[in-house]
Structures are given as structure tokens and as C-alpha cells.
Length: 243
Image (tube, rainbow, N blue to C red; front, side, top):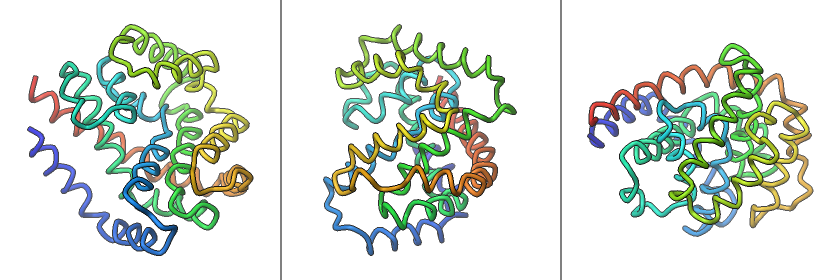
């Protein structure tokens, strides 16, 4: 089944091959990057919690989507099948996102400031546009979605690693998922990325770049997210063939 998924991913991604080459070229001309540094970037890159939680089809997938960034690869098989599906879906979403031409364009807003970390700030920006996309959900619907996610995560508390449990408390108290719709909270999230990034100064004007280029980033989102939703549906259909 995983082979079928990877074949599907390849069909989707080969259309974006030129973009992948450009991203690799950017990486080779940027900051010194050891394997540890690359893993650090990968962790920071997964900041679009709202989008990941929205692109789920079962409660177990919600858990898996969040767990992906907090567990070792070899540990994923210790979880129930629906949580494993969420982990697989998370990875498929990230791979598709990184290769999409609209995301490549969006990274150009932040790359002059943060180089290899541009993807992390694009992730945060995309959650702002998801949260404000009333074609996907009403304001009440987004509020209900955020509350459902917190409920599902707490119901599966025993599966959560300790470092995620501590973050979940803050996430629920601040209602991060719903409050991504506010510009000031996107600023907080971007500052959090800067604080965690090993090779970035904490006073880089990434939020200002977001505000200045918000219309352009909105266009990138409009070109990107419908494609991502269809891709997620396709991956989920493959996953359900196993059930």
C-alpha cells in the first residue's frame, strides 16, 4: 500500500520537478547545513497546525497529523492504524507543499531574510489564510473545529509524547487554531519560529514582510490550497483501501 501511495505522490510531484531543483539550488547556496541542521529546519517547517488538522478525515488522523513532528520514524508503527494514517498523511502534505509552484513563489517573500527557513514562515502564513477562508468554514465552524481538535487530542492523551503534552496545554489555553485568523497572532507565531531557529536573529522583520506582502501571499494560497485539498483526499482514498 505504501508503494501505491508513493507512486501517487510521484505522479503529483513530477509536475513540480523544476521547483524541487530550484529549492535544492537555494539550499546549496545558503547557510552551512549539516544533517542535524536539516532536521532542525524540518521541525520548524511543520508549523501549519491548522491546515494539518483541517486536512483530516478521521479522529485518529488528527492525532497522527500532530504526532508526526514529535516522534521518531521507527515509533510510528506502534500506534493504531488510523493514527499511522495521520502520520502518513502529514508527510504526504508536507512533500506536496514543498514542491508546489505557488509555495515556491511564497518563499521568495521570506528567503532574502531567513534563507533556508523561508518554508517555516510560509507555513505560518498559510495558516492565517486557512483560518480566514470562509469558503472552507464559517467563523463558528472554525471555532467548532478548533474545539474538536483539542477534544480529540485530549481523548488520546496516552498516545502523546511529553513534549507535545506541554505544548497542547498552551495551544488549548490560547486557542491557537482559531486565533491564527488574527495578524497579531501570526506575529507571535513567527516570533516563536525565530526564537527556536538556531541560526537566525530574533529581530528579523519577518512579520513586517508578511504584512507588506499579504496580498501576494493570499494569491499564492488561492493557487495552492485547493490543489492540496484534492491531494489530501487522494492520499486518504489510498489509505482507506487498507481498511
